Image (cartoon, rainbow, N blue to C red; front, side, top):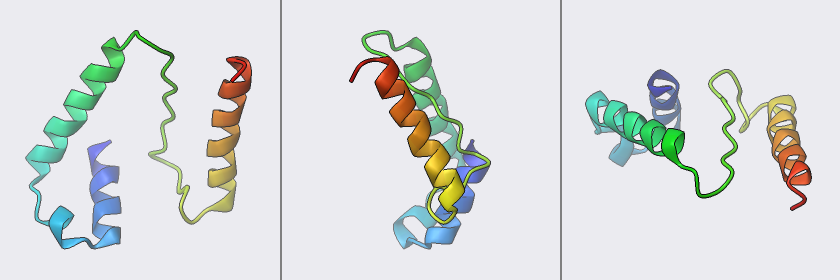
Amino acid sequence: DVDNAIKKIVERGRDFELGVERGYWNSLNEEYCDFFNNYTDTVVLKINIDNMDIRDNPEDRKLFFDTVKSKLKELNL
């Protein structure tokens, strides 16, 4: 969600991201959601990481990658 994205932007502290207004991030999020909710050409794996810290929490990172690996195995990839 946009609040979590902005939180991560603030944590990274990159000037080029910090100067972007919230309205842009809201619009970008809506466009991504619209695109992927209507995308049918291939399988899309959606993982909600709003309550995860895959960068600094080894358990969250493991859960994330285990989810991806499980889906790939399910698809025989």
